[in-house]
Image 1: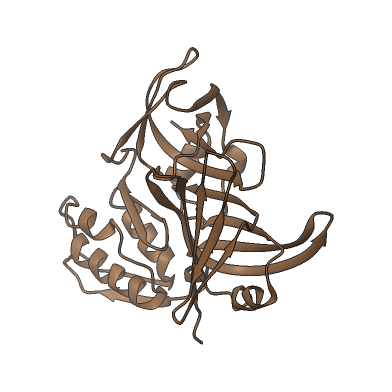
Image 2: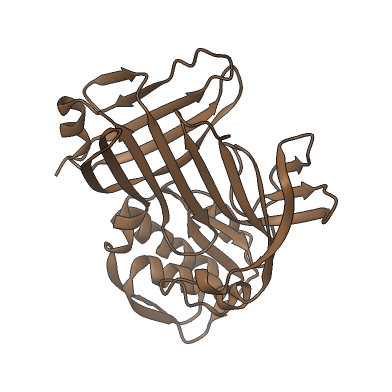
Amino acid sequence: MFLPSYTLNVVYEANPPPTRSIKATTATQTWTVTDLRCAVTVKADNTKNPNTSEIKLWNVSPTSLAKMSTLGDVSLTVGYQDETQGVIFRGNIMQCLTTSEADGQVTALRCSDGGRAHALGNMQVSFKPNSTATQIANKLIDSVVAETGLGEGSVRALVTSMTPKVYRRGFSDSGSSLRILGDFLVGNGIELSIQNMALHAVLQNQPSKAVVYELSAQTGLIGSPDFTSSVDTLNSLDTSAATKAKAKMKKLKLQCLLLPLIQVNQQVHVTSKTKSGYFQVTSIEHKFDTHGNTPWTTTLEVM
């Protein structure tokens, strides 16, 4: 079945009067609705759990609503006027619900980053004796990409640099292709997650060497960072020992003005009165309302 893809571009204009628009593009046409209220919550982390997003739209036209109801894919790009914008979420529309509320008709798009991929791609694999870890990993990646439609992301490059290891008795497994690949990589010191419909991999307990963000009161940090425990955020989809260990650790929670380019596993340098230093981003929550009176924010958990 053909599923269209939508791109929602939301631009924050700091200078009044605000003129906001949301633009959606399918394979066959482009449509734009001006001054449409849009409220978004995006939650992402570095586990195997699918990242999620809820996009609420007010008073969508019947024509636009019909397009969204096909439950295709969505890409959400946000940012500031005349500044860098970034994709904060890309995934599948899992539900499209419309309700009547006091302030109008509200359509809620409940989305999952790779949610459909978790339900697809069951497979059975068997590798001959003396296969190397790199050979096995590359074949598993090929199978996951082919069967789920996910992008390779950063996983292929990291696999090529794995410590040489030979499976003398071979290797076999069956079940979800994502679960097989994830478990195999964890056994070889690599953690796997899905970020914006692509496979994302990092070495265990090592942050990405990508851009380091400076967070302070001068660069958008709101309030003071505080410690939180993420024990109750552990999802049954990810039962690896590494994730369980992380879930028991206290993390630093901080909020700042919207950072559309920040990604999980990147580093941030925090400067505040209560806590300062370099930290790895383990979870992200973006939240904004185009017609609200509150700042567009990004909340981070770091460790």
